[in-house]
Amino acid sequence: MSILSVRPARRRLGAQFLFFLAAALPPVFATAAEADAGPVPDTIKQRLTACTACHGEQGRATNDGYYPRIAGKPAGYLYNQLHNFREGRRQYPMMTYLVDHLSDAYLQEIAQYFADQHPPYPPPQPPDPSSATRARGETLVNQGDPAKKIPACIACHGSAMTGVLPTTPGLLGLPRDYLVGQIGAWKNGARHAVAPDCMAQVVQRLSAEDIGAVASWLAAQPVPADATAAAPTTAKLPLACGSILLPPANP
Image (tube, one colour):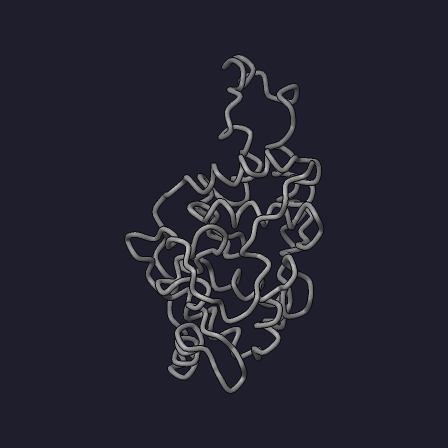
């Protein structure tokens, strides 16, 4: 499979969708033993069981390499992504099913819950065996490629690559497969953000080798002890970017 292809994990979709539905079904389908245990508490944690079925406890991610960690991401970023799924700018059946009829206020509540979670990060993945690939990834992240008009990743995602408030995510602590899949989704037009879509512009200038190099280098980096997003900055971004703004609330 090309590294530019979106990775929907079709072979696992059926089983995971059933698991997702099981987490989301009303209590009438609970087993007798569960019923005897008393009523299910109506807490935000309990209501988001459908989310943690794929994204892991507290949103820390699972070990399958595809579903991302959402714990600790800026609330504005998480809200934007939920909004993008609801409005069709991002495509994934289970996510669309989950958020399709949720209000902006509920999306904000979900986003804030996961933004407030800070479980430990997993160890970094092994580095790419090719020194040339590692060097190219590090260069693109920290310096970009002026000849190809590719800005450095740190110009938007912060000097520590842990994100910038209120809406720019950190890119450390994510699996290589997930990073490749999402960059590839922008590359082939399957993923969009609010216009002007700065990521879509950047990735069109990246080759397949560049995408693999960036993803491999990021996945191999240790996450700093203080992995919180940096304070908002007034520095001018290399490209106009609609995703740094929150969408207007529905009337």
